Length: 527
Image (cartoon, rainbow, N blue to C red; front, side, top):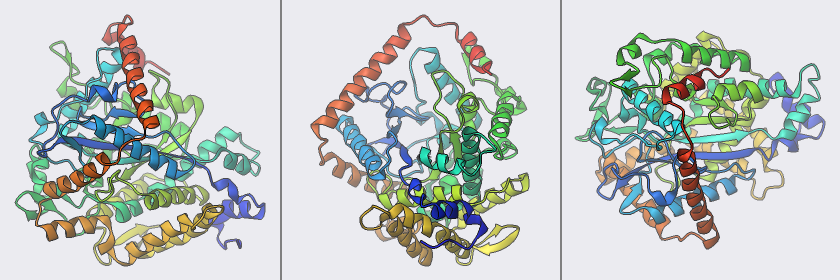
C-alpha cells in the first residue's frame, strides 16, 4: 500500500513505513442490545423479568435497562465480529426459549404502551446496590418521564488492540503508555463527535413514532407530520431516537463536559454530579420516607449523562465509573448512537459492525484537535439535522465553520476509511471490510436504500401504522429465532449462568446491609 498524502494520516503512514499496519486488526468488539418485551397482542409486557433468564442484577450478559420489560443482552468482547454476532444470536435463541407468549420489539422507538404508568420500572431486589439502581430509575422517571426511558438501542463497545498502543508509543517516549492510550481514546472520541452523524444517516431506523409516545408531552406533537391516525413522522428523518425528542434535557444541553483530556472529562462530569439543580430540588430526594431520586443534582450519577460515545473502564462493584477511569484509564469506548435495525433478527448485521469498527479506527488514526464549546454546539447541531432531515436532498452541515453537503462530507469520510478497510481485510477472505464500506456508498448515492427510508416505504406499502409494522417485523424475527433451536452446549452454559446469577443475588441479599442512607453517602464520597 502506498503512503497517503495528508498530514492527517501521520499515524497510519508511520505504521505503513514500518510494516506494522497489521496491528490495526484484532481490536475487541462487544455489543449491548436493548429490546422491549411485548405481549403477543403488541402491548408492553407487565410481567417481571423471567426468572429462568437469571438475576438482572448479577447476570453478566442478560439484564434489564430502565424498565422491567426492557431486556438488555450483552456479549463478551471478541476479536472477530462474527463471534460477537454469533454470541448475540445465541442469547436471542435462549431468551426466546424462556419467553411465554411474548416477543422482543425489533424497533428502537417504543410502542404498545399507555402512558408512563404502563412502563414498569426495573427492580433489582433488596440489596443496597439493587435499591440504588431502582431509585436511580425512579429519578429518571421524575426528571424525564418513563416513556423516554423505554427507547431501545445498540451500544457498540470497541477496544484498540494493545499491540497498536505499544507501536504508537515507540514514537512518543515523552509520555507514558497509559497517557498515550488515554490521549488516543479521547482523540478518537472527539473525531467521532465530529463525524458520528454518519451513523444516523446510514443506519438510523426510527423515522416514525407512535402518537402515544407523546401522551405525557403532547406539545411536542406539533413538530411532526401525521403519517396516519396512530403515527407521526418527519419525511426525511433517519433517527428520531437520536433527535431532541429522545433522551435529552435542557439542563444537560448546557453542560460543558470536557473531552479534551481524561482529567478534564472526569472533573467536569464529577462537577455535574455534585451541582444542585433547582428544578430537581423541587422534586425532593426523600419524601415520606421513600426515595424519589438519588440526589437533586444536575446528574444523579455518571450514566445519566447522555452522549453518543463514552470512554469506559470496567468498574469494580460499587465503584464510581469516573473513579474507575481516574484510577485505571480508558479501557474501551462505547458508541451509543446505533438504532435497532428492524429488518435484522438481532438488530444488527456484519456489514454494519465492520463499518463501525473501521470508522472508529479512522477516528483514532486521524488528527483530533481539541473541541471548544462552540465546536460542541456545531457537532450537536449537525447530529440533530441528520436525525431529523438526513435524507433531505442537498442537506448542508457545518464543517470547519463552513457549510458542506452531507453527501460531500460523507464521501470524504468514506475515502479516509478506505485504506483502513484494506488493512483490516488482510488475511480475510472476501475483503469483508471493503465490502462493508462499498455497501454504504450505495446508500449515499440512493437515500431510498437507507433503513429509515425502507421503514417508511414498508409502512406505506402495507398500509400499517408504525406500531403494527414494528410488531409484524418483530413477530417474524421471533418465529425465525424460535424455530432455530439453541445447541445443547450453549443452552447448558446459559442455564448454569442463570442459576449462578440467582445464587449471587441471594448471597448478596443475605449479607447484613448498612442503612441505605449511609450506603449512598459512602458511594458519593468516593474520591
